[in-house]
Length: 423
Image (cartoon, rainbow, N blue to C red; front, side):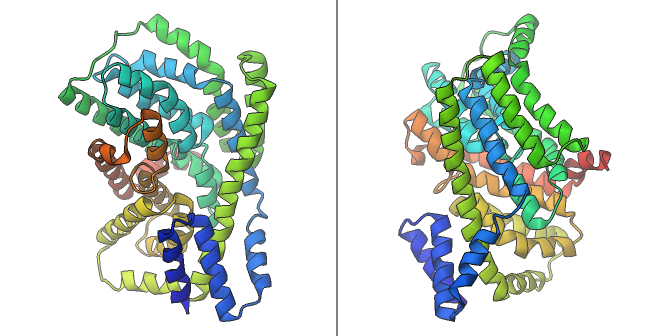
């Protein structure tokens, strides 16, 4: 009977139904055919939202929107510009470093791709960069938005796997920086091969000037992480503090936040939160059906039955997640894979925090690959280039991302080193 749900799910996807609705509709079909009371559907749908940890998600989204509409993106771009523009492919390098800076402010890869890309992609095209290369850099580097804390995706993982949000945030710092660095190196190598220009070397005085101008924005992630790590506030309380901070900075320090922008930020927050929570709710029903049918246990036993050594089994899991990230959105994948893969990772002795970050980065790579890559769609739209034309330029960044995933999987210190300092 489970095949009714699985087949209907894939059929709905083929016909273009959004993943969240496809999951909910196929799970509802199973419940109707199996004769399960409909009350179970509504109970499972709404009970998943009753979480104090989830309250942090709208707060983080709102804080990011307030900062973005407060026009802090340009300030962070100026800082990045004064750091790396002298490298080969200077503006491409600025795009990567800006995404790293924006990650600590917005916590959203999609928001980073839109805010950074709208400024840098047109400028890169003017300076002779191909539209496909500009779109590829922006799409790939923006994935650090959900790896470097704060990240609403990390909150969902921590809730699903019953892990500490604070530990997840701390564990994501080094991997996020590592992704940024390897994408910076990739950009430099490609720029040298293609002869893209360097920009004028900045002075130290210029760098200090831009750091000072952006200091209030750059302080936000420090305040967030500091309050959580030091036990001053929970993740939800820290998220609420960040909203107040973003509002005060936008209104009274930068004076770039208007009441119209505040309304727009609230509107976008409602939309963004609704998208996340509907996906969470329908994914949870879908996952509940799979668990009740024993599917995760069956898959786990099948994978363990292959008799592979631990290191090889990790490779299999990573390959599955990389492929799934290309064809499905990130949050539904989390609901599918966490109940299946976490027991396998535990059996081979992999720390759950480490595996969580490996899963996050593996699935995040799908955000800039066809056919469902959200940051790729946004970047191509800004660059006015077809997605099919970016595949050649996207490939080096995808391969570089896989290298980072493998490093994180086989070198525990990269994910567990920082959290261990705060135990």
